Image 1 (cartoon, rainbow, N blue to C red):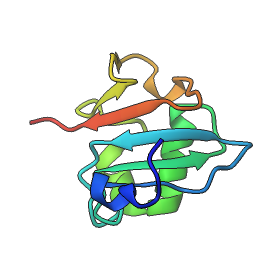
Image 2: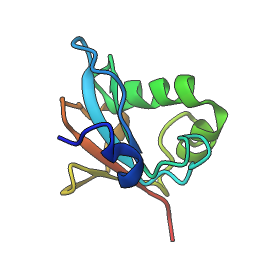
Image 3: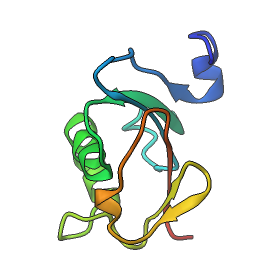
Length: 111
C-alpha cells in the first residue's frame, strides 16, 4: 500500500475508498490530460463488469475516454487490447467480464 506522498512520484492517483464499490487500477490509456497527467489511476466504482466500468469512466472523464475506447457500436474497440490482472487478455464478451476488488486492467492501443 502506497501512502499519499508517493502518489505523484509513482504517477497515479488514488480516490477515497467506497465500501460499497470495487477498488481498481487502470493503466495504459494515453489520456494524460484527462487523467491529470497520470499514467495509472486507482479508484472506486460501484459496478461489477467491464461495461459498467467503461460507462463510469465515460461519465467521469468525458468524451475523450469514449472516443479512445469504444467503437461505433459502444463496445470496446477490437484494436484495444485489455490485459486483465497482468496475465489474461480479454477477448470474447469483454464488456461482460466480471471485475473484483483489487483487479488491474491495462488498456493497450495498437502500435
